[in-house]
Length: 158
Image (cartoon, rainbow, N blue to C red; front, side, top):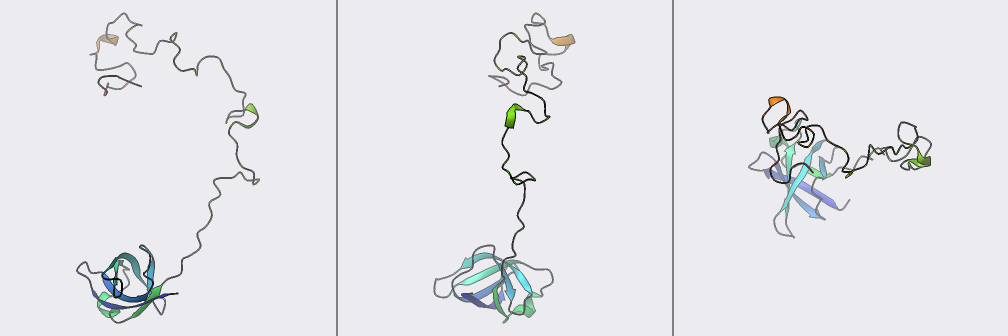
């Protein structure tokens, strides 16, 4: 690893300021004492290029910040992440949408006109054309008949 450092002092946020040599660590990298105990994560890198500081915050709960001063530190190696198997089926093939003309429930696709948008023949519940302009069951015009209050103004429901 090209990063090596030493804890210099406690920051105003009760974090740790670490002087370092070599390449600066990435934000979010885990920093540990050379013995292996994790101090925390890199919050910021501060100062000039040739003598910068790394701010570690928040510090792990098991660390006493006063006792950490002077300790040599290094970047902790990353743990390998477990792969999530959500993008493939159990048999390893890629999933394709509506493969074979079947829907999710296994039935054939139906086109009986119920799922079409923009057809002018259907009348929605609470539509003013259905009841001749009067409000449904004596309610105020703020209710649209779908069980909720009208919250939009202007263009209405899209």
